[in-house]
Image (cartoon, rainbow over all chains, first blue to last red; front, side, top):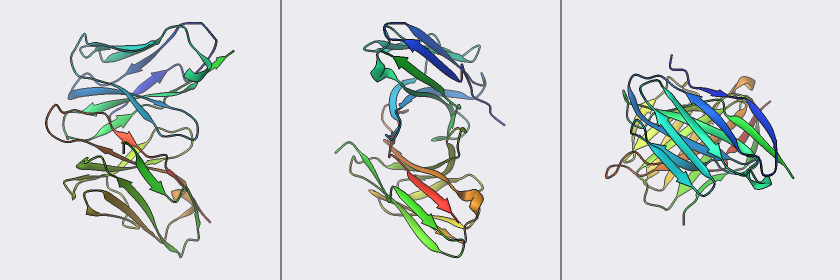
Length: 113
Length: 115
């Protein structure tokens, strides 16, 4: 069984705070690591797809890093805004079978104005 | 069009009913997926279609029957479901080939309740 763990489960921050979450995944059979943002009553939205060890990606105030050797990825949000409130899901793209994503349980972020 | 559209948004069905969930995309994506999500759990893969052919079935019970009639449409036919099948059913699509891997585009899901 392939386990993808995310921490913390939930996070409450004030507007303007910077925050980060962790995704832990198996270090074998790695193909890619995806991050998604899922706002309530909407569709999950792809943020990043990362493949290379040491990779860093950035989209506005959100960035992510990847360590495939130790099996973890960090997602950072700089200067959180209320519109950042959502569940952030990571997904391990299993190298043993194409097109197979295994999702973590997510981190629920609530940003208070 | 950059969306995946799922219908219906909500469905209540009895255990003896037959119903279908529909998923549509017009982005030219050749991979389409069904995921199931129960409360406080991660989305779980059910089926993958690649170029309209079923490529992955995650040992899903036969009361769930997928169908991909063309490259834009994905159906999930439901028959004789159990109350424990109540969940959010998500459809997604992605490109294939080229600079693989790509992020998935998800629909907003069908909330299914089996009574």
